[in-house]
Amino acid sequence: MGRISLPAYHTKSLWDNLQVNHDSSQTNMEMEKPDPYPVSFTELVRGLLADQFVTHRFRLIIGFLALISVDFLQLSIPLLVKRAIDLLAGQEATMPRLFTLAGAILAIATAVVLLRFVWRMLIIGFSRYLERHLRNRIFDHILAMDQYFFSRRSTGDIMAHGSNDLAAVQMACGMGMVAAVDALVLSVAAIGFMIYIHPTLTLFALLPLPFLALTTRFLSARLHHRFNHVQEEFSRMTEFARSAVVSIRLIKAYTHERSQVDDFNRLGRRYVHANIRVALIHGLLFPASTLIGNIGLLIVLVYGGRLVIDQTITIGDFAAFTTYLQMLIWPMMAVGWVANLTQRGVTALRRIHGLITSEAVLIDTCPSSAMLPGSSGFKATDLTFAYPDSARAQLSNITFEVESGIIGIAGKTGSGKTTLCKLLVRLYPVQRRELFYGDRDVNEIPFEQLRSQIAYVGQEPILFSDTIRANIGFGTDEMSMDKIEAAARDADIHNEILEFSNGYDTVIGERGITLSGGQRQRIALARALLYDRPVLVIDDGLSAVDTATENNIVTALRRRFSGKTVFIVSNRLKLLSMTDRILILEEGKLVDDGSHQALLEKNNFYQAMHLKQMQEMEGLSHA
Image (cartoon, rainbow, N blue to C red):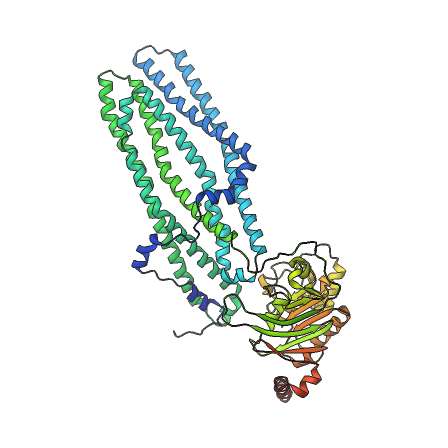
């Protein structure tokens, strides 16, 4: 390869995950793939759209009445033209009669403009309301999902559902419905007028239409899978871009910009290729419609011209008939366009349905009226846990009881420390009678109520591209500035914030990119302290701060959390020595439990960790 590899979580592994086989045999088999979201169209409409059609029924009724009125007004114009031509051909025309016909056409055109504005406002407006409804449902569902859901779906895929898929549904339920109704009404009425003028000529003129139906059916069957492939490629490209932006400092640190550009370019080429394959179908539908429409016009010119020569129909009839036939070209073209929009919309709707009908592994079955226990302690009894896709247990038969105080959690990498924190915060399911909050099984406490008792600081601080004030006061608009500053002081970050150009109003970049690691951790800690909850879980959230700052923070924690519970995951002896009790995990098991001094006397892992860190400190002092 000849280039530095990035850590496993980043884009190298992402690119490997995004790779798909695009050889010709697989491309040819693409149309044979089963639908990833097998659900009938009726179920889709009933489950996702029906309530919106009911809610906005009056808007739709008025809108479609305006649309149909426009069609009939347009269809009346050829009759007026026919009348004018027949008057001219029979030398019966006078200026007043011609002005009367011209005035009627002008009045009809004015009415068409006004009614067209009405249906556009009402029907296209409905499609935007529908889009908003689906977007809210997607967002609500995503927020209700558990950690397992996000481990199975990339951010790019979720973003594609909320952008490309929604746009496709909006177009299908907006211009798609308009074109379908417009084409149906216009074609039926135009054919009726044509039959009135001359039935046999109408029959010959419409002979090519069955070929259009067959062509549309043949091409539309291939459009569905190709458009679904476009959406999948868009998801991959979006996720790659998101990952690159989030990890931009890492990319630059490894001088990996060129390879990222190359990988993104490959994804872009695949996305363009998928779109071109859709455009190929789309491009065939319109020319086919036009060709078939012109074949009908050719028949009219030959056969209809003979009827005029034989004086079976008048010149005005011929002109009106030709106008109606030309009006039919739009509905014939609309067949292909509507088929395209419908296939795109149905495909996108199926993808959205697959997203919002996905079920969480962690399901809240407790009534919201359940009461919380008075104690803030935790008790684990033979707690065992394995991730849904894992073949082995990450935690095995862990038993402990914590009433209050500062509890340290230590252990080797992969020993289960973070997993235990996630279970305490109820991010994954646990078996009944294995984990208790106070005297209550956590399975008997609603998620919202239990989580409202716990403040959490993760390994990777989550910060937003907003002001420091907004990041600390996230979700707590009623908090005063005094409380925000007090939380920042206890997190030992207040003075550093004041040194920024705008103090607490300083805007930090995405994920706090303008801050140091220690500053990010302490701002995230200040946010947790602001909530002032009975339990605080810090999952290695102080790894980037120095020992003096650690000491200040722990002192503040003892003051703030007197009589409450604090869990701190760390392997730093200085920090662990300031805790009341330490749990030692090894390969998912609780192998020891005791104070800092007791563990120094009896635990081999703790002794080795102490010796190593003491040697490192001595090395630094001699340097």
